[in-house]
Length: 633
Image 1 (spheres, one colour):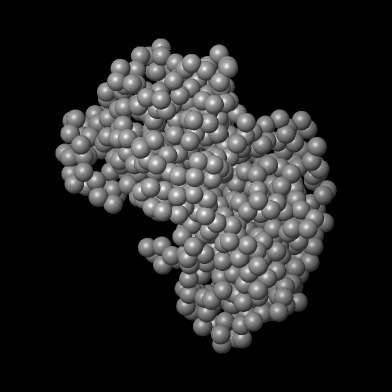
Image 2: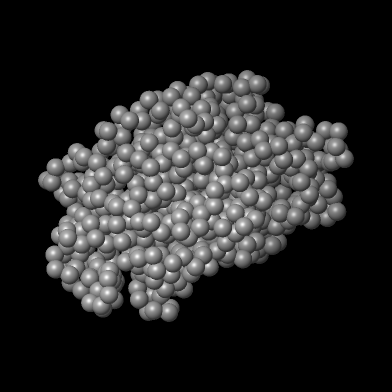
């Protein structure tokens, strides 16, 4: 069993220093870099009884001192500003750049040019999954004694002080996570990652860092909280080994202990969004996105570095319900697009030892205005080049080009290909079992609208671009009624419209629901297809929710409520991700822990030629009162 952490394990504080390593930016260069990144110089020193606004003196003069905590989140295996699926520099419509190499430059600039010292750098989780580089060092050349994870090497070099665990840290299993943990020079914090048998934390709950600001030494406590949804999303990796209670409940236990251990300042690094909601509905008693609840309900917290939601929050001030004191929340945008900076002002207590917080503000800096740190580039160029070679290796050919650009609103060959390979694998696996004669269906989601299979030579990256997550394949049994209910739930993804269009896709897709207050993501919309015969249906947007799926038929005959099917489905969905109906209780007939992305790559390697004639047909339509709807990208 993994090592367990008792309260005493986290109490000893460790020193932290304003500069962890030699910076490459001079004062003027640092100032220019910060100005370009959107840096707002802090206001003149001012104090208030609360701590939503004021600042002290950056040099630690008098009885006050101000320092800055820097933070990232949801790095998802991005070291360089590179898109492995496109084999080109990353770009998007907002002109964002990504990667730790750029974050390193911003960190250097803040350490050199900010008004206050920046002694601490923390992260709010989701480091180990998300790019071909992350996949390569988990599956192709796994990390170990002789192979150090590029993310660990980069974060060590930049000088991170602590990182909370994200849910994606568990995607490749606990052994790989433990290896990564040993390779990091900083603790991975997880106060609510508990041993299933003892209930004790299996990662350090918190760390206290001693920060020197001028003549002051301030003790800063960092509490790490991960996401309860891990119990659902990575059930196969954690069931029976770890449990993940709620953030509020666990923070209420640990924050007083941190204060008792001498923390003058308490910062929470939480892999949980700020807008209270749960993609898994009521499948767990704890909300997925709970950072605001933590701020409201747990006294003694000064600021929260938020992760998981992939949204940008420069500063959001929440009032604690018990103390009425403000708590500052900030979330830097994903993949290293932004760096959060939390300015904390403390004042020496008039009675007793230690300091009290009198001011907290935060802002985010944009990484797209700075160059990559040449030292990080030099450190990891060989690792990056190795992955580029791997993802560009040719494994087969395609007779035609297949794009996923319009997959959310029309039946496309790219998703038919995924469904075919999944269903074919499940059918072969259940041969000789009692379910062998049941018709096999499959579900797939439009994960990546930018994905495309070119005509001609097909590489690993082309295929991997269709399936960007590390999901594994299962087979479950559904009734016809459950198939209908599943598709009705999926159809909530579409917004109501009047008429047949044409409509821009933004007016039709990504509807707001009770479990998706910011809009249903593409990955929570599923299409379903048949293997040996077509499953056909229309989604009629003239009908109310729950009655949108019309004409549901298998092999030309209406699907009966008591008809039985085997469904090829991914582990995220089967474990409750997205809160789709029936899946969690459906009988499982296949679960060999085979990664779907690797299954697709292996299929192309073995078959050699992708011929859409084998699997592609238009089996579902988006309609209004029976007439097809026209949607434009």
